[in-house]
Length: 339
Length: 184
Image (cartoon, rainbow over all chains, first blue to last red; front, side, top):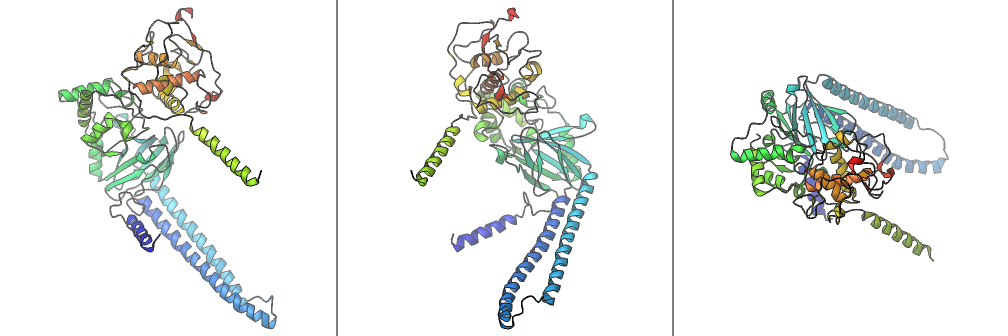
């Protein structure tokens, strides 16, 4: 590798680290938890760097000194006399190491406790279930009519502590929204959880961080941090059932979706479609992406996805249904009304 | 024989074994070819139980028979489409048992696929409009594995969920017999 390419690679690495948007970045401080993690990381980094430099300095000093002393020993034959200066330095070193370790332990404990306290005061509870290869999202509520099911998209109110309960239906996945929190695994047959208190309004990207099969890369999660008012507006809208089809084409699509293959897996609130195997489609067209971040939401992509999902996301559980062209037009027309 | 020669022979042997292991199955995520119905042509679609005139096996059966991914997908569908609700995990309940040797409508892969697609009297619904042909064939492949029909290297050595039964690799192979529902 030439010097120029190496320099370019390093520059690229730095520009990557300094992404301005913090769309998906571990250097962001868009949540209380990630900020605490980053502070803790800096404390560890600084203390460990100081210790490392001290060790290297002592090593170099030792090498130089040893050579000089060896010359002295040769001359006057003193072998086993301890050096008082060295002894003091050694004791001092022990004290520094001890203090450093205790300091790190205290910093770690404080960060851990403050995160646990935030988790104890959570105001919103969400159950996130990972599947190959999409995210099932459920907003929990004591009142079952206020329980909300959606997919591949989280909406969080800014400044509100949220507890996300993590489950998996098949294999081990990992929840990772680097701008908001660290990683946490989703394990089949076991309940995990993570707390997030977002502090900055914005759109963030999450990604499955544990290899989970062929389409692991196409398992993204959009996290929308809104103001409290916007969040409530979204939440109330999502609680509404799907509107009835208005045009004849949309009605034909409705009949296909609720009567044929689609309803075996998908649910649409307010219609007979109530499958639980695939993502909820009640407000599909209001989401930003199709198929867990595989494509942006749009008419063309909807056509492509419904017509042949196995070409766009091979191995996905969504089968390629041999739709007739008029059926395809109708289904997409209906799906587009699910705002 | 030099030790070097022996070592390279050993490496060759290991490589050959590894390569042979790769040839277990072919994975196809799209059904090919996408058929119009299940199964086409000389359909064994008959609602008359018992032995019928033997028809040649549907060509697509070879795509799904003894195919590990197909069995695995079939197992997923078997649970998620609630086959368990009537047939349990093969032992039967409201529906017939699928792990025994009796097949009222035939125990061949294409015959099972036809039973799933068309539905059968006394409760079995038709899945033709709900599942794709590919999914139905995969389900049929899994149903056959409940009575130990596929070879042991393609079946799952563990169930998807917690299970009290022995793994599918230990399922004894039942003979396939046609039976008349009147006999039961």
